[in-house]
Image (cartoon, rainbow, N blue to C red; front, top):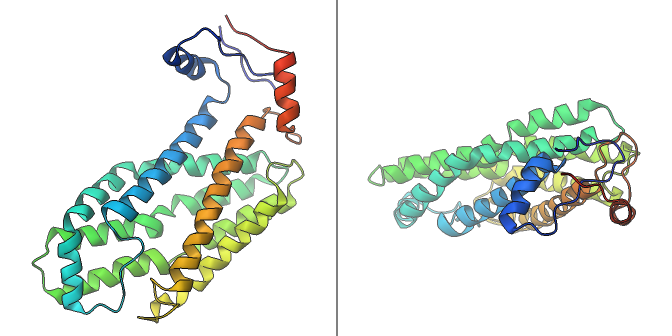
Length: 279
């Protein structure tokens, strides 16, 4: 039989003699945190696929120059056509992987000593985030790549639309980062360290400085410039790595209670000294 998760209870122990497949099946059947781990591994897989598609297959990141003329844009579409069509077909198929990612972050807020309004607000915001953060660029560039014989002026319009929506329409991420930051600062359950709240603020500020990309073809504020892309991407990369690590730590600390989360070392020591097994 399986054991239901109880606040403060030590987790059931995986059979030490089980094979790799047996351990996986055991976790799927008995681990009280299986849904959380599913969401976390989905998040890891999604960000790896995202990086491979955008940075390697389609070569849309780092973004090409907004200063290209219509002929240069047409040449870019011809040079990246196959990568765009195949890479973005993968993204269209896997877009739904963002849902468990957003749900896990919202769950982390429900574990805090703050109103559920924070979690629901974040979930609504980030349910929309895939549109400006990924899908519009994928759709528009796929439209251009499917008909490379189009008038170069039309391709230039698609090119501008795609990269401006990707870089300059970051209001969803701005507000979402501020919601998460405020929830962490108000929380008394020690779900996340306070320094991560300020990292959310840093991420929010980078979403503000990309807005001028609508006005510049060259320089630091262009969509491929030092401020609008390079600094933004470095901060986002650090931010993403941090919250993936912290969410993993949260799952390991989770005791399904309503008070402060236990320290990881103390929780693992308790699980070692007071094992609970299933049969």
